[in-house]
Length: 300
Image 1: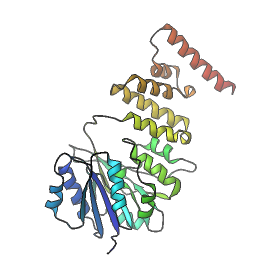
Image 2: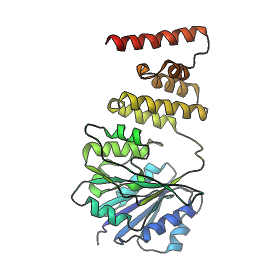
Image 3: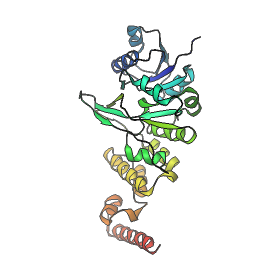
Image 4: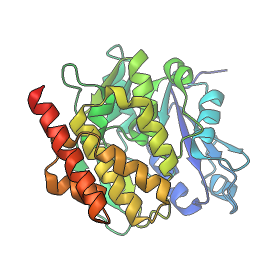
């Protein structure tokens, strides 16, 4: 059996129209020596008709019971036979030269790459480009990701098959999956940035639910490699999101505690806004806690 140059792994769940456009962006690649694995994560609508309509013998379709995208990704990775693996979400697109540029850049330079991308809203034709960069000296991957937002997005990943099959994706995480994967990958394999954007990432109109438990799990795994300022910024942002989504009291309290962990980096007004004391006793306690932390830092 001839081994293809690249295996493209596409998890999908209930998005047949978007999948068809995504698949066409793969079929139109200048690199044609590919296998395309579409892993259906238990969709409740017909996905296979899209595969049949496109009618390209490079496409392999697998349907699983519904779990999550990471389970589907791992299934596709394990089934793949290509020398390299490229990840692609079913609502993202590649420019025609994407795989060619990835292959030429990687070669003997590294084991994998993450790339710049074009951010586009669902109902807007024009997008905004986000450029990635290499890590600075002594900078951790988690610090880089927390500072740069879209710093390592799934559909930009292009890696040797052996390295990706070694790391795989955490099936327990429903958010920060790409962050988690690339952090673990970078600890064992060499990653380089692809500066030229050839991926179009679709920003969803509505995010109906955020899995805050996954967010907490991810950050706890990596908290010892995060600088205090990035730790603070992350938790302040997550506290705002948790309040917006009316999360339960336990989640809100957790984010309040962590967002105020480095009090010395906050102004008093910022600290009070985070802890939001409800009565005189809580206000006095919060003020004393803040003053003692500042005093401790000053003495130290």
